[in-house]
Length: 171
Image 1 (cartoon, rainbow, N blue to C red):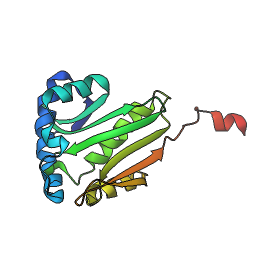
Image 2 (spheres, rainbow, N blue to C red):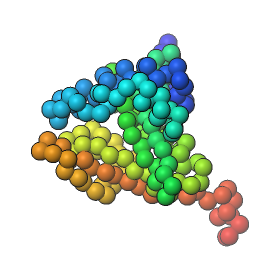
Image 3 (cartoon, one colour):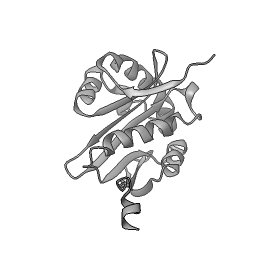
Image 4 (spheres, rainbow, N blue to C red):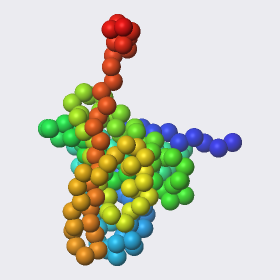
């Protein structure tokens, strides 16, 4: 009998597993762009702890193992910045990235201050671009970083849900 994956808020105890998973997951990105000095591969454990304290960090667990993670913050203008959506290579292509993306949108959009979701990826990261488009994101800007990399920023507006019974009351 298999275990199911659960998604929850990360804790201080998860930071080392998140760092190791991040290092594993970003190897393919580094290879794709020919740059092994990208920030996710050089980020420190203390930096991840700081992100945990300052924003929302979610993890997906299979038993005790962290197999996926995502981070997000909301700025003063109501833009939710989502980053470092990572899924263990053996768990990819099973919908876990989409589940985690939806979970962070729900977590950060629930407070009512969020107006827009935004995230970025490299122009060659086709799997990422496909996932984000599938979840309603559209390209809003591209910025050439160097000869190897153009960053693509995608966004979507937060969908405001009408209170239950609002449609029935107006009919």
